[in-house]
Length: 171
Length: 393
Image (tube, rainbow over the protein chains, first blue to last red):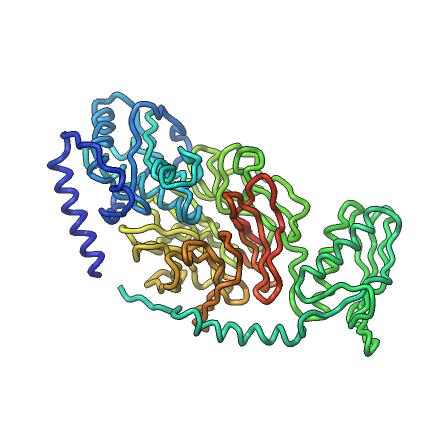
């Protein structure tokens, strides 16, 4: 109970800080920041997704926006990464694209099925932030790739850090 | 949140698990020696394959040692190939001349392996009264073609067949209770959807994640993980009406890997609401979940066997090992394995062995573990990865 309440308060505080931070570009964070789940897990999931994914665009342009990086075992969009999501929101809100597929990825540690859920939660955390920035939920698709599509094939901390990411595929 | 720590101290709890095991061990008194030296085959490949596969199956079963001199049991009969394969098989107790089995079996001439697996299980049942595993199948995933496709092999790791040609990613296969079909997650239409072999349309294709599909023992329901309401949660879908029932509401966490209890009344699954992934049990009608595991830094990939034990992968001291817990007896046992990572356990049809993946030097292969005393056996290994095994019921 306590932990939950703590997490909720933290999330509330985070949302508030994000609101004040939005727009200003954050400095490059130190690599250590991603080693711990220092921001806890976000409370997400009150906006339903599209009823069916059959017929939705399956792919998009991944070269337009930088991926959002995540801490180990965390699905929290860290404040240092928020500007990346904001850039996508701006793009979509200006009507420059039809929509976005947010691809959630994880590192190779942990079970494949658990990582599939974790990847989805990362994509959903980004989605929630996009929605809070005014993006129409129906043009945001989430796709978890779990640990199946690593960006780096290595097996060390550096590779794992690169693989814990949310990728924007713009369609 | 009320947490029921069913499992406490590993040292203490192993006692009750051992009590049940001892019985098996004593009745077998180690191994039963079985002699097939007088069994006749033709000069053809099929009938000789039959005999060598039969011997290997009996050895692998854990109950027998195949010998060619003085044994407790004698197998007489012959296997002949004449258009089709015909195997006569009589099993005698040497001491009392008592006949335990006397039957004749037939199969197509190309199915010598299948025939041997059937006969092996019949001999195991006739002698021990226990179900064998030889005729079972293993579904698994491999990157052999460069893509992750679904494969099936026999319980001895032979007869490997590629099932999907989706050219995308296959994740987490599991069998239907009739052992005829496999439910799996595939990205062949871009998004992770749940499919069943022999059926073109997906079983589930909601927006977001559709994964970890597991068919209930009565074949009527599918437990699965969906994110359709905004967060990955555990659901049950009726395979007749398509109606969904949501079982978990954990907006701070993930659910994964559901599996059904043998009676179909409960589901064991993974949730990370405590901060790390752990195994929980929930009624199929929903309600409060009970936490099963508390030892190890994470506990994932549960498989609830017919024997009542839930096998899962437990991260202990930085590596994954296979553990088994009995929720009714509140017992926990971690299987003895080497330094490699052992993951994704699946109960073999005999309820004695566990098939799992073993990863060493970033290469995954399929292994057979004995929950009694036999050493682990490599079933499938090589220069590609084999993982996520699931045994047919």
